[in-house]
Image (tube, rainbow, N blue to C red; front, side, top):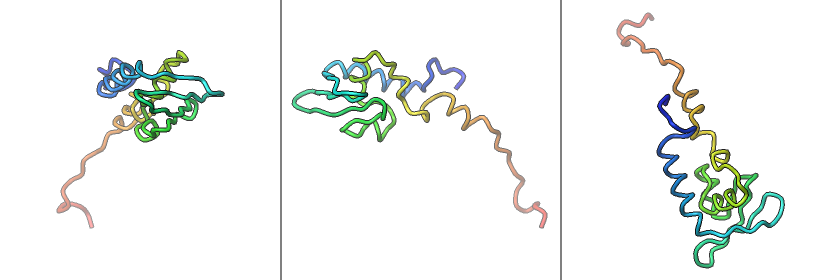
Length: 113
């Protein structure tokens, strides 16, 4: 984890990069407050709320990473998408989870009763 070149893991970083590339095919229109109407390929339209980190397609809520529609809204407002990725994917969370040492125990035969 010390080798991470970003604040998120490499697989997640590649996924975010792919979503960014796909988001250029979406049009984001401001509705109000933090809400956007995003038109995707074809006639698909989704409501995105960047403050709540939600999208009508539900992918953002499910995986904790902005979906294509959410990414389009974020990029149209010059937000940094990394700020909208769930904490569970960030380096600090991995370090907190894997830093404590788990000590081994002797086999049950030699346990005191």
